[in-house]
Image (tube, rainbow, N blue to C red; front, side, top):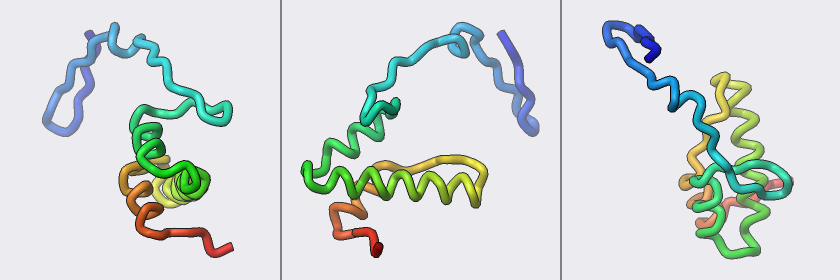
Length: 88
């Protein structure tokens, strides 16, 4: 077991967990998380390309501003469902 000190809390990590390989689904040749797929499939087929574009753009700007590509796929799906469209 590996230990990591985070502030005043020590966390123990199971090495078997760290070595676990997760098979992610592929969309357009890229691996996607289950949450991405679930949110994308909740949309009608004609809105999925809009969703894909917003995820890509949001991911870029999240990395640029915060150093991480964290994306809430459910929120992006909600925005697309409620009418968000690119202005270009």
